Length: 115
Length: 115
Image 1 (cartoon, each protein chain N blue to C red):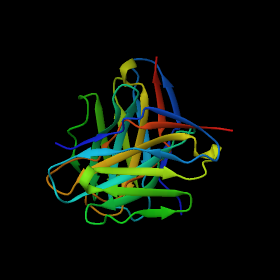
Image 2 (cartoon, rainbow over the protein chains, first blue to last red):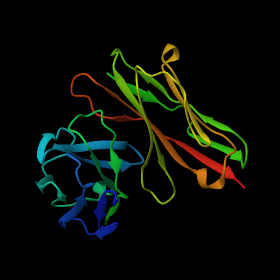
Image 3 (cartoon, chains in turn orange, purple):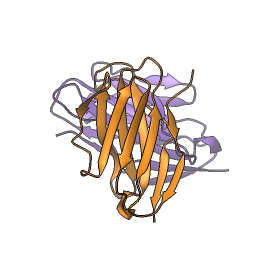
Image 4 (cartoon, each protein chain N blue to C red):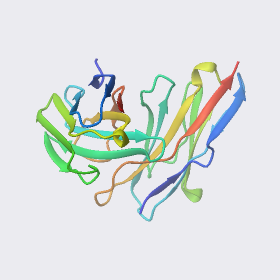
């Protein structure tokens, strides 16, 4: 079975440009998470969806970040406009149930570099 | 508030040696879950194990074993007869079953196996 799929795997963009990261969760999973990993702050939860509904977006850094989940098999994380401090690895994860304590399975990540 | 500490930032051992990675957590809750994830040089996060606070039995999976001790709030991970492919950053994570806590990751331990 396919795991969590993320695209692109690498993204290099210039400051001010819009960036869209994509995620396809494991089929049948009901929860989806977006994380950001940096050397300084480690792994941070940005937003959490359950049954396509955003449940907790308290980790979203600022209004430049937005996330959507239009259906059970697709989610996007958009940064507009991007800034150099947004450079990080962005992970998408999914879990089977709607409980926060369920095991989260991570995608391969998208390495974002903002010049 | 919940907290996870991985005091060992980096460990290097010679191949075939055994190595233990430490994880200590802090919580006032009685029901919680602990996880270990592996992040190899390729960057993805790989799920290894999930344990709940009511199951203190040690777990063994091949060369991997986990020692959960509530008395010391620890959930340590041992690799027996280490191999070069075990080289990775290992993260311990914790989440309480109460409230709206997020999965909290430790800062990770970088393990290098020397051939």
